[in-house]
Image 1 (cartoon, one colour):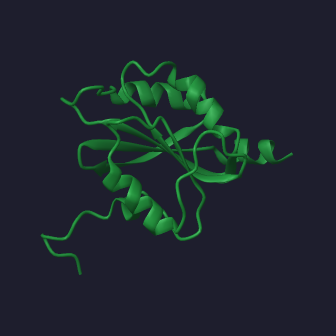
Image 2 (cartoon, rainbow, N blue to C red; image 1 turned 30 degrees about the vertical axis):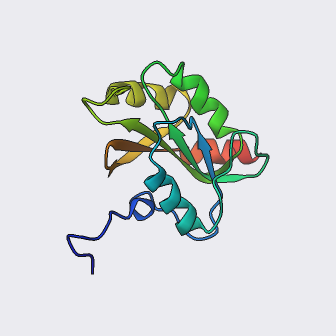
Length: 142
């Protein structure tokens, strides 16, 4: 049971499980180390950077207003993604510096070949869960 004084379990909110390979994109000095460390603890491994050549189960994409073209970044993130992999787009909450309108994610996802399925509250950050539609995963496998 979780008491009111327990810290939030960010990794659980993101569905991170033991032995999953998690790649982190968009790290900067403003990223939340509490979220990062929770993911590393849950997966049992360090977060991989953009230079990794492993098959990725989960992409943690820190994204802020002004970071560039979200569609291009999502398309790059899909390349090493496992067919049942997930991309979490993590953005500053409304009112915080770098806030991204939810509509930008909602419009970018299908253009990049992804579907938005849910969201998670991560303190000062909001996360949107993006997955590949099953038809795309089958096509990618061939």
